Amino acid sequence: MTEIDNKEYFQIGEVSKKLGITPRTIRYYEELGLLDPPLRIEKGIRLYSQEDIRRIKFILKLKDLGLTLKEMLELADIYNQHKQPLNIMPKLIEILDNHIEKIDEKIARLASLRKDIVDYRKKIMKIIEEGKIDSTKK
Image (cartoon, rainbow, N blue to C red):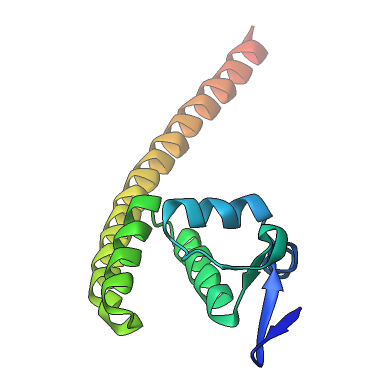
């Protein structure tokens, strides 16, 4: 940890360990524009504030929720225009509703597939049982 102007900053390695991701992932989020460029000190060392860390955690949460990088970039653009988290909430709700719909559709397809597999298994079991019965009659 480094302190500058009474604010705590963390180097990329510290942040990556703290969040369980690689430094490359953090740099990638910067390259994409999901994360603002960090403060840099001598030799180009990146320093991240608590706000930067909160933003990375938010990005990771969005990733866990299944958002695509494109969707995350849309939210980042909205946030960067207004710098207020509440402004991204309507778009986030829209994206999450879309994901819920996709998940529901996938669940329905999987339920149908499960039913087909169970029915197919029953048919196979019946054939096996009938085969055993026929072989004992001979």
